[in-house]
Image (cartoon, rainbow over the protein chains, first blue to last red):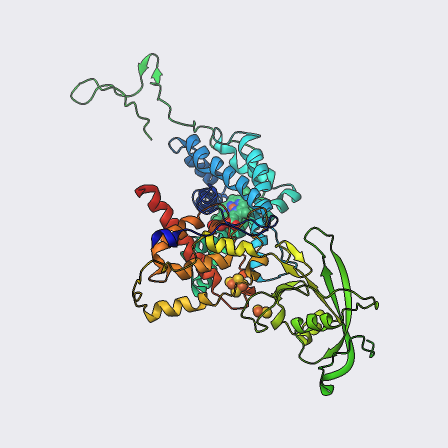
Length: 278
Length: 270
Ligand code: HEM
Ligand code: SF4
Ligand code: FES
């Protein structure tokens, strides 16, 4: 039975042009597509949430923001984390996203239906996010004063950037586009991974994703407008005394002798602790 | 609108004939390689016409709007009741079934006196409105969209199906292979070579069949190939356009999950 059942007759049509049949079980596009889909949620989506929440510290002023920047840059293996969980996945998702975008044949002009519009907006918002992220990473992470080394400058660096009205407009547009892309991306993920197969499940999922996206977008926009319209903060390092990374304390001395007790109450010698004390 | 009829259809009942004409603009192509051209026909209006009867009217007296003799239009049709799935074409620019597309509605929709007809845009033209849709047949074969019951001896009765399974399967069994879901899909094109919603829905139909389930893993693996279910971008046009209202987005979601589970399982177990 199996032998008879398992074999399909060959393609004996005369069709040479047009869309070709499924390459059953062949190729690697499945894996690449699923990695793209997953990378949009973790790590990129997770980073977006973290980024918008961290940047909300802007509303607490320069010192609070500087401390947040310092905290993030103080994470263990932070440069490895940055490349492995932000830059490389983002590059992959964006690059493959552009590839996906230009392989699609949008037709909202003929079929102007809601889902079809969302399909187009997902692609437009992705392209906006890509263009924005390139300039954002270059101007805020790599160009100008290095924030990992001087977190105290973080607030004024952002405030100076948003001082230009056109840059403010770019940030607002990109914030809306990115939050839309992420929110609809979660909805897409749930639909495509079989988490929300039913019509009702997908409707409920749309409400949840819409709420998450709106909340993120609102937080992001508040941060943006907060710094942009706050009084101009002088360009200075608000935490000059805070060195980056772990530094061994040097033994402070007065006239060659330690200016703190070097013996305990029993008269025994004690060495200074190698771990910096607060 | 002229009251003169160039195309006197003998079977027309007098009370239906309003004495006016309407136009049909048809994209034609003599052979698969010939350039396409547009030919306009002016036809007497009757109540209750559908597009297959319009094409029949033209075939009876193939004279175009400028009075020149021409050939009848080639097109596929068979059942004339939206069940064979052969008459899909672009009507006023949108993919639909010619036999269930009504002239009265189409004229109202077009807002003028002209209806446009064109072959489906994503399938190679054979001639005029007839296209080669055999890619769907190839896709159905690629996912083994059948129940394997052929053999050299009597296999006896199949396992019983729960009514719940029957109810879930019935809507999926309504597919008429018209290819409209594929035509309207932005991901179905010669770049992606996406398999299209119909095939995915049929894989689901046969995976849910107690006897058909024996080929379930093979179907899922097939659908993970290039052009498989992963190409779906969830524009959801398929489910909007399907003349038989198949729950296509649901089938795609279910099959996507099954394919992921299958691939993960294969990765660790095989
Ligand atoms: C940087 C440029 C980006 C481009 C060009 C881009 C492009 C795309 C495209 C075309 C899709 C639809 C894929 C499909 O049909 O399955 C998509 C999905 C998605 N994107 Fe992006 N994207 C970008 C950035 C981002 C960012 C920054 C995030 C995170 C906030 C993100 C999160 C997602 C998610 C969650 C999905 C859904 C995945 C799925 O369909 O299952 N993308 N992206
Ligand atoms: S699923 Fe619907 S649109 Fe697609 S081929 Fe079947 S009947 Fe036609
Ligand atoms: S002629 Fe059979 S579906 Fe239209």
